[in-house]
Structure formats: C-alpha cells, structure tokens
Amino acid sequence: MNISGQLVLEDRIVSASMSFDDLIGDITPQASAPDRYILPGFVDGHVHGGDGADTMDGVDAIHHMSRFHLSHGTTTILPTTITRPWADVMEALRAVAEVWRSGIPDGPQVHGAHLEGPFVSPHRLGAQPPFTIVPDPVHVDEALATGVVRVVTLAPELDHAQTAMETFARAGVRVSLGHTVTDYEGADRAICRICAAGGVAGATHLFNAMAPIESRRPGPVTALMCSDVAYAEMIFDTHHVHPATFRLAHRVMGSRLLFVTDAMRGTGGGDGISQLGGQTVHIKDGVARLDNGSLAGSVLTLDAALRNAVDAGKSLPEAAALVSTNAARYLGLDDRGRLSAGCRADFVVMNSALQVEEVWVGGRRLR
Image (cartoon, rainbow, N blue to C red; front, side, top):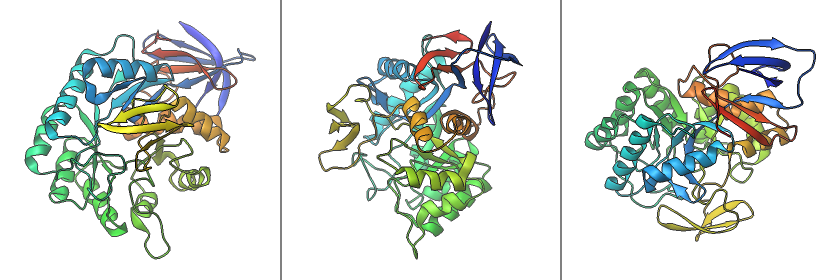
C-alpha cells in the first residue's frame, strides 16, 4: 500500500509517498502531495483511563479505554494502575497482562503496564488514594512475576527503595521517580543507582508531585533535568505545567522529555462528576480536581498535547517527537516512533488543523 501527504520526519516535513505493509517501506519525495500531515503513531506511557473506563476495572475496560485513545492517535499504550490495596493492584496487572498477551484487534498495541502505585510517598500523594506500601522484595517480586510491568513509579526515599530500584532496573523495567519528597541529592543518587544496575531512569509527570526548583533547594526536578541520561514525562495540558515551564524543560532536556496524558476515566466526557481510585473527581473547563482541589490526573489526549506544543512555539517535528519518538526511545521500542523504513507502520493522518483523520496500526487502518 501507499499513502501520500506531508510526512513529519524527525528533522523536517517532506511532501512524499510512503509505501508500507505491516512495516514502512520506501519514502519517495514528491513535488506535491495532499494537504495532510502523516505523523508517527503516538505512544502514551502513562494513562489511567478514558471514555468512562479505567485500568483498574479489568480487561473489558482496558479494551474500551485503549480504543478511545486510539481515536486520538495513540498506537502504543501502557495502561496505568493507581494506588489501591495491593490485591486490587495485582488484579489490574493481571488484567493488563491478559490484554498484552491477546492484543486488541481494533485498538492500539498494549506494550505492558505502568505501575504508578503503591510504591509512592504518603506525603506526596497528589490524587493517589492513601494505600501506599514500601517496595519490599515480596511485593516487587510479585509485581515482576506478572511479566507485564514496563514502568514503575517509585519514591526513592522509601524503605527498601534502593534495592527495589536495582531489581526493577535489572528486569528491564523503567524506574520513574515520582510522588516523592526526595531532594536533589536523593534524586541524583537514585538516577546513578538505576543506571549502575543497567536500567533507564525517568520521572513521573515532571514538576508535579515533587518539590519545585528553588534557589537554594534545587530539588529532584533539577537533578532530572541536569542528568545526561534521565527521561521525564510531562502532562502538557497547560494546567499541570505552564507553557513557559514546558519550554524551559524542553530546551534543557530535548529528546529526553516526553508527553503522557495521565488521563482518567472522565476523559472525553466533558464537564461533570467522575471518579479516580474511588475518589470523587470534578471536571470543569478541561481540568479534573478532587474535592480538596488537587489535580486528579487529566482529561488530556495526545493529539491535544501535540497541538498545545505547537501553540507553545514548537515545530511540528518537535511536537511529534514529544508524543511519539521520545517515548518510544525511553521504552526501548526501536521499531516505532518515527517514519522510517523498517519501522512498524504505526502512523496518524491529521488535517491542516492537526485534527486526527486516520489512525493506522501495523499497517491496518483502525480509524
């Protein structure tokens, strides 16, 4: 098959025709091509739910939320847990494992799970319910035994955290610092420990649920931004992070910064009442909050995050990298995240207003 348009490559936009089956073949420049953009499929490594469904609800809900995010350009997804009693978390991981093994014929590829809770600080819960536990060897081994954990959010100051970071890293799990009260030195030591164990370090929703940058207390954000190797998620709905703060982080981190949605079940449903981890969530004007006013995840989709990046002054190739290329590299998915010969034919067709018109996964049009 062939498709023509304005292909968004890593460093430029070209008028071209792209051949593909399940993989991308030749890319042939053309003097002119249809006025539509073709971008690499989006990769969401942190997403709780959408369209009324939540990862914690089980297999059917994971199918439903994944198909919803597919309609917004997501071709690879990591359903994400929340801090709940351990038995509930394990049930959710087993559900993700079932979907990972069987696939979603009309949905994105489920690469695995992001274990966001419960190895987080009780003092930086954000919207996480108060069911935190320490990452002792028994719980870590039980989570790894599911075979589906690809990213774990972990507060490095917790008891057993140092050993847990090494165990996860050796198992190939990305260790993401988040929901933490650690300081600059603690984050810097954690990054070094993860890397020394052969792992990849990250940050869960940079700037949120962690100490800010101050003149004499640089905090974990500074350690993450100044690292040469650590990646960082960002929820760029312009509510979690100001556009100027995003531009600063992007200027410093470049390809180590990636967008996620952190979307909750109310995403796509407009204003109203929803819930997250058993907590009431109020959604108004595109912002989700708990009763106490804390941000409760987001109602963001990655196509909206892409448009926000462009509105903040980024070029379309730069914005595409934030929703696709950088996340794929963070997760070690070398077969996707860019329009290049031999990569999976996962791509999104958008009109001139950057609205999704078509979504292709493995060479099959699913929208």
